[in-house]
Amino acid sequence: MSAPSELYRLKSDLQGVEGVIQSVEDGVGSFRNALSDIDKVLGYPKDIENDIDKLRKILAALYDVTEICSILPEVGTACGEMAKVLKPIAVSPKPPGGLLGEMKNTLHEIDKPIEALRKELGEIKKPVDNAWSALDNIRLDIARFQIGVDTLIEEHGDNPPKGIADCARALSGILEQGLGALNHAENLVTGQLNTVIHSVNEIEDVLNNLDSVKHRMEGVLDKVTGKAFNKMKGGLDKMRAHLDRLKNLAVRKFNQIMEHFGVDVGKLEHALAKAEGRIEGAITKAVNDVLTKAKNAVISELEKIPGVKELEAQVATLEDAAIQLRDKIENELGSACAKALRAD
Image (cartoon, rainbow, N blue to C red; front, side, top):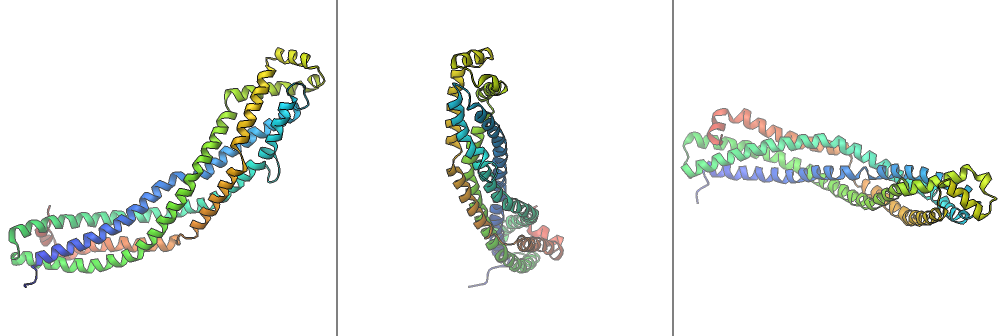
């Protein structure tokens, strides 16, 4: 059986290079997608921290006024119950801020390493994009040669003219050298990228689980900045402003004065009970348990991610292999052979 002609050998070499490029591009592409997907969720801990800050200030102020108003007739019991609920949530114990303060601390412990990860991923993004661009350029060159060689095989089969055979032989030699460098770079990079992709995806899943906490905090924040809540708080503020005058009044007289101030005591009591239930139901130790589990999972995955400098160097090796192959084709093959073999 005769050896394949130079054109068939070149066709096989082009397919080999294409396969390696495709494999590397799949890995690099997955990495780029992972970077894009995780960018949004990396901000979740900080977003929730900000919501908690706003919420704690509002609830701490509400605690102050409900605690003071707990000595008043008629609404005193409802105010006292609200103060009792708010104290461990927004005021005490240590750390400052009660359960919300504890949640914020847990989020900060998540956010600190996440910020470091964000910085590292930002550093690796440019080298990865550069490698992707270099691979894409050589892939397009290979595709043009493949179309050209297929056309030449249709025309000449196993017997191409000597000039074309010489050109095909020269390009095969260049590709075989370049394939070795690409394979070496792929072996260096692919495993590391897959490790990073796996850990980044795991971290993304963990942070996506915080989305429910984020929506919960946003929901409570919407309630405590809404019209109904502000109306309730406004009624309490009016009581607080006239505390000395109101605290020793009989219920009937108290209600008359509050009516004069535009405060419906019955509605206020109902609003306090409703708000108390919503706040107590939304901000629980279980929420902080979710955050603590998230923190532990994130830290565990971060420990698996290889050093960024090492990864940068390996990605640069991949970019160099692609650029060098393209340069060798351009400089060593010659324009006449390139034109003869390529579909332009």
